[in-house]
Image 1 (cartoon, one colour):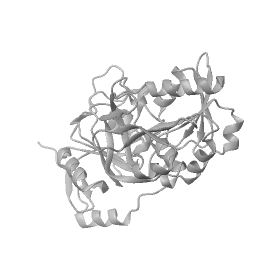
Image 2: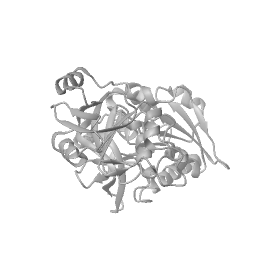
Image 3: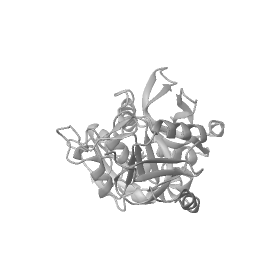
Image 4: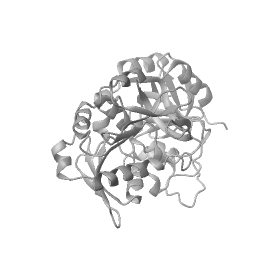
Length: 364
């Protein structure tokens, strides 16, 4: 006997996608986005940058290798919801300790499967990211749309995912001390710094310059994170004070915060960049990197003209800014995620570059 639909996803325009629930059974309204990655659903689910977002996976089979304890990007996933075509609840992986559905249920995150994710992705691509609700199949369309329109996506995303107080991640035989400003940092970023002989002190997004000075860092890292970069005014103010004082490296939201601190502008993309297959050109070397991305906002190119920032990387799909640098201030950033290993090693040199700048600054 065929299972009956028990959940549905409804968009602002009233369009419905009927399917089956997995994970938590609660109702949730979020911004709807899509991700084109073929693997890495655990890293996506545990990436703090997806706070207040329901992610549609374009790759059809999700859940087939389960959940592995060592692969989380944060302790407590804050993704808003997950929509997939085929969900596999019987993973075949010797490292697996739980199913994807169990992790979603543990963290009160609703999921839906069995829907036409190709059609839904085309809708997002054509009409942009919009609010959507995952709800019970018996919820009427009018009621669902009413709930969507009544809901405003919060602007406190960074404060929700940032740590509350500083914490340490030390490594054997350290050579450098790095302070990482946590706007929603992914653990693999810290692992990459540890591998390069860095002791890492992670501080909250609203840390003061005095608190960072007291740690006497050799360099400062600005992390990825969710939401509109212009909402994080206290971190932008902090970055202004860090510029010229320490070597600074920013990834994703950190890249946007650096741009705003220098006086540039950001804008929201129609449907953002999410996935592990975005070609980016390094303008210094001419090489093309296959990159992993996850962001809704980008830097306005024309707004950079009045700043000392130089464009170092460009997205070959839409010509958006993917990298910036001010050599005089020892500041650089990228919009994509070099720690996500999409190439798989195309972008690892960026961490090495940060270490070289730190080394040169210490020996100056």
